[in-house]
Length: 497
Ligand SMILES: Cc1cc2nc3c(=O)[nH]c(=O)nc-3n(C[C@H](O)[C@H](O)[C@H](O)COP(=O)(O)OP(=O)(O)OC[C@H]3O[C@@H](n4cnc5c(N)ncnc54)[C@H](O)[C@@H]3O)c2cc1C
Image (cartoon, rainbow, N blue to C red; front, side, top):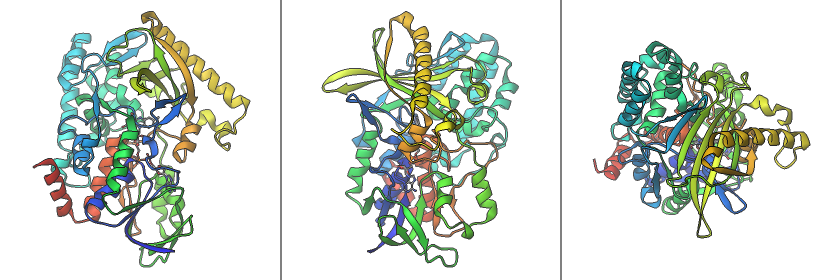
């Protein structure tokens, strides 16, 4: 059966859903293809013993009034379907470095003041760091929907590492660790990421941190509702089997794995760049582009422990604690330093059958090498040695949590755990990394139009990782593929500007 669309979007994570809805709102006829049995990608939650757990969306910045995420959700018309839950600014974020507790509040001024109290000899370094963050973000046109302009204008701090900037600012190791602590939220070590990209990602987290009632499922449900009002068709359990009728660097038709044939104007990939190469005919791509993509390195993934907690003080229980046994964040995000333990502990409240349940997720950075012995196996078909490996990891993390929080009477009952292989299989990603590719200094990501002229790429590996970066990549490409003015009018109307 042959169908005709203006756009085919491949991959229904937050970036693919965002792109589909923008185009739908512009009156375009869109087909959204998803290889899994449901849409949503990393946003979809899973349930264990009836309790919902988040997969790839726990907390985010940008939900505050006029924040990046707030703006994008407003333009998409789904802001009102979501119920944001903001973290307490003063008490909900902490770091523990080498057994020392640091309160890391939310809001630039509060963070600065807190850091100045801890490190009175380094006040000018703290001021300068936040000044540089502001400078980068104010000069980045594509971080603000209200002033969207160019694709990306590089700045000098795009070519200097976060580590270099911190080393130039201060010799205080603990302060440097705190200022780079959020690298767990993009999975690239301080010596590999540019200061500018660190700034673009962290600015949001410094301004506000929130989650959403019902987690990523709330987003997915809101998109599904919105799709029913525009011309977006969704087909799950399906991908592209072959690109057909390639003429003058344009793909004419797609053959899908369900046997359908689709004609279209443009297709937009919202999947990992290496998976894009697996689908496109390689002979139509330049060798340099293929090598560039093959050379992309994976961001870290996570070994995750999910469970419920009790005891202690559970008031205001949406909170985040970053725990590092070493103050060297490069070592923490490096497979070759297995003795350094780092855990991002995320605690939240869920209503289950009318009862309030305290839920926790402990994420420990992990790398493909850790599970390569089982790389050829699939979920539910892995042997005893794999389960022993998991059990050892769980015990180590449990013990670490007990040592840190047992003194307050807080308890952690583990329900289940997952490795990068679990994420790989569940999320249909090539390697189970949390943030796609590492954001290396000076790297040209696969983003926007490809040499095949009606083929585009978006997603977390295209612009910046995290749901904000993934969504923003869709807005930027939508403006290059469709009438800019129409999109800007939609933005202006939705944001009353
Ligand atoms: C453990 C973990 C924790 C995280 N925590 C946070 C957090 O708290 N906050 C935050 O902002 N970000 C977090 N992230 C990152 C965030 O989840 C991602 O940045 C974002 O969701 C990526 O969106 P995406 O649309 O680029 O890709 P994805 O969500 O990966 O979606 C890609 C989709 O494409 C589908 N697909 C793959 N191949 C094909 C194919 N050939 N054909 C059709 N469909 C295909 C997949 O099934 C999937 O549905 C986390 C990630 C992980 C793994």
